[in-house]
Image (cartoon, rainbow, N blue to C red; front, top):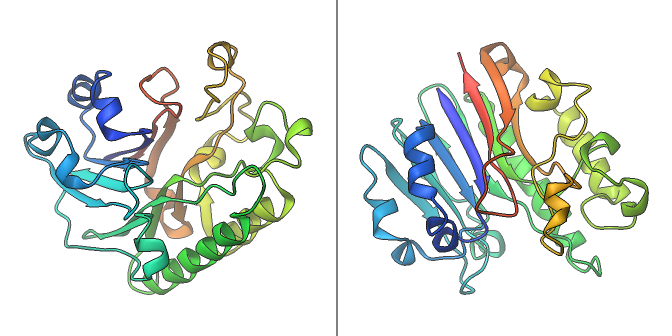
Length: 253
């Protein structure tokens, strides 16, 4: 089973940049999208009509903001939001139940340059972790999406100059430590412990930033410990364009 996650920075925007050709070529079993920036009624019809795929979406009340969607050709038994208004109103999470595991498609909040939303981000993160621990009593867990945090210095090009930047603040990184201590494995880093230059997001302030690979790894697949043995590979598809993020991929045996 091939799972891909991608912050598309606008579903309508990425649709105009070869998205359909890419998904046809890559043919994931499940595709989790973040920052769709659209209600499902605004999705390009050609995406909703993709053969063999069903689409689930959670959109923000605020127009053109946030939002997650999942395209799946695997049978999904049930789909829920987190059922907390302040998070569901921003289209932050979809929880899917499949035969052998739960899959969470998440778009974690950005703490903002002035750090004003860091408390909201951390509260959201704790809420999602509590939800995961409850679900895990029934089945193993896979969570994917844009976490908006680079965990360790190896996960961004300029750690020293970003120590006071949201996405690399000590308390944001400490939450990642806590999260992993609960038994969730950053599967890319588990399989590629020393891989440098492995990034999933590049600022759009200057076109050369991506060309020079001055990036951050903030998009992840985490699996609960009991699923590690079921993982075949975890990859970063850095050559895929169309967004300021690139897709990440998990293949299960």
